[in-house]
Length: 295
Image (cartoon, rainbow, N blue to C red; front, side, top):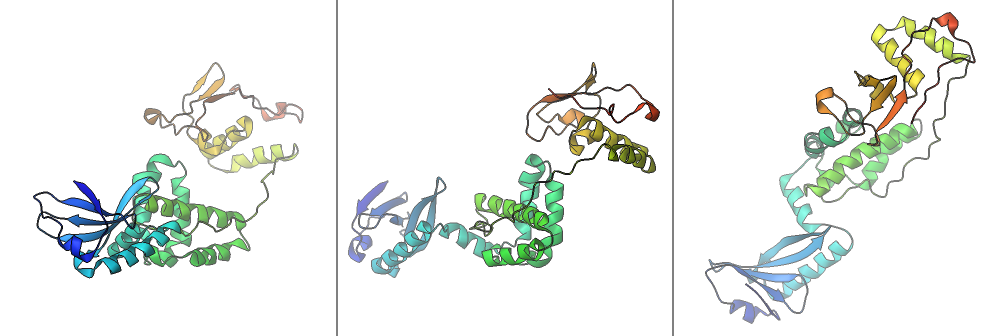
């Protein structure tokens, strides 16, 4: 049951006690409510919506008075308007969740199931974030601290700094979604400007690379050569098994667990021409290095 009235101390005191709890809305201030329990307890709440979900923030017992409750509700309206989430902030503060706790949850509940490069992200966080933030509560980590952490890497290794920030931000985004963290302090921290990586092997370098492969483990050498010959990503080559039919290497976009295939990076299926016929090294010439053909 839900009713409305202009809250005053007198009419809240007169609210009827019923067998089942019910809520009463304040007609003067949107979001302010009183919940009347079957036990007779009356409590002020502030109700608001954020990211499509309704949240109830307990202001306090009705005995605190209508004036105090309205003032607190007005302050909470301002907090929500500025993007804060009072309910989640309170939950996180009481739980004392450290950055390490949501990081573990993120790995187990999300990253390992949805992110093919989760191991790399985990390594970045373990090396660059946990030594500093591991014992801090999520609330203690501010945008200034994110800038300081990333700034140490930005001067000499801007690409690494961007990767560390992305890995950290993913944890905070997950924590906000699960309501164990109030805000993502990485928002508003700009990435470093970087140049595109366009390094390619020159024709004269290809035979040098090919010869160098002979000095490593045969399996590693074979994988490196296939990367060179097909122009495909190392992760896809590493998972190549028996996907070659009529000289075409078939790569399904979706993961196939029974084959150990992780799927392609963009989730789109494609295939690559793969000439498996062996050629002796002295048959190669600058004009005859193998080229991949993709469709």
